Amino acid sequence: MRWIILIVFFLLIEIYAYQVLKTLTRNYWVIILYFVITAAVLGNFLYQWLTPVEGSVLTGARGYAFGFLLSVLLFKLILTLIMFGEDIYRMGIAGYEKLSSSKGNFALPSRRKFLSQLAMGLAAIPLASVLYGMYQGKYNFRVLRYTLYFEDLPDAFDGYRLSQISDVHSGSFDNKNKIKYGVDLLNEQESDMVVFTGDLVNNEASEMEPWKEMFSQIKAKDGVYSILGNHDYGDYKNWNSSEEKKQNLDTLKETHAEMGWQLLLNEHKIIERNGEKIALIGVENWGAGGFKKEGDLDRAGEGLSEKDFKVLLSHDPSYWQEKIKKDPKHYHLTLSGHTHGMQFGIEIPGWFRWSPVQYRYQNWAGIYEEFGRYINVNRGFGYLAFPGRVGIWPEISVIELKKGSKPA
Image 1 (cartoon, helix red, strand yellow):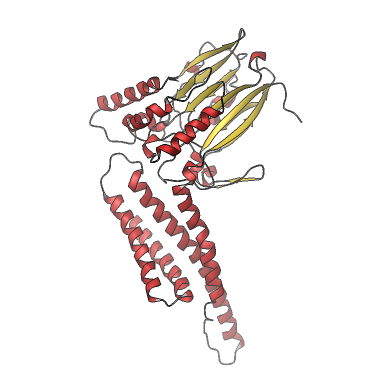
Image 2 (cartoon, rainbow, N blue to C red):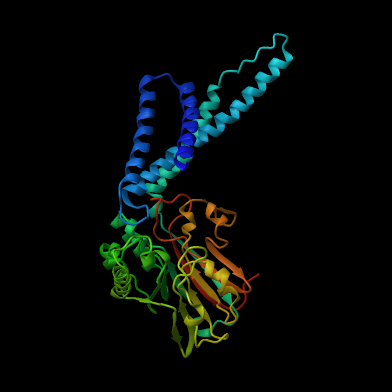
């Protein structure tokens, strides 16, 4: 039934899109080229989709096939919406003429060429945006800086800077030079600490092998700390045995250590300066719905008091809404990822921000505050499924902690 609905939907937008092309040109070769491109994109997608692969995650050629199909569908959908709107207008004019004319004829006015030209121009915007996102946008790294104020921040940590990356998804990478640029950009921030908030791979620990040396170059004065994300547990692949799956997770944990990253598994680390301290807590993944729920905040924060200043790493921001923000131990700042900002949206800093993912996650990108507690949701360093980013760029968060109250 799903395939029937998909085919009917595709045929409908194909018919409308062809009306635009037919209005603009009668050139035989242009029309042939149009249908050849459409058939190639659809055929490639079906081939990739029907070819058996390891794991359920869209990556590599499969991801690109999805990206090309998405770009073509968006292009034709815009054409369809505009042409459908024109058809409503044409039918209204024809109906009015029939009622007001003594002859009583019902004849649709011809399609207007300028409207077809306008439709083609508007439809080219999402087409170009998706293609740009696939080849450039996914490596368009941005450094986003935030300053957060806390009355109870220890004096020794006034001005302390943390850099955060999340959702590396190394199994999707296809350009070492671009990734090296992102890693170098992270190191250039010279923060006191670097944290990684989960999803190092898509399916298997082996995906990180080509990238271990590069990511081991990430350094900070107080170290690099990390946690696990939902993809790190190997849940999106069929394993031959539970032992094989466990070995994969053990290998991934060893990878963190080999890179010099301190992996926090429902535990905490005390960071000291001049006799004062803050606590860095890392929980395993906890996600709403069907996502893995290994996170244990109570265990991770055992021994800490309400008065201790605390920074928490939690991959999925759902845990912040579920438990963290209202926990009596008062977790000052939570650093999360997971959403990727859906890798698609519109952001005008300080003015407007939108992505379809906001209808799934209350906290989906950037800084949020409730009850005097903060969460930063990093938009992700890598990408997954759709091999690109449009409007929501890969992010390096730099957060400076300041003592005192926020300036008015």
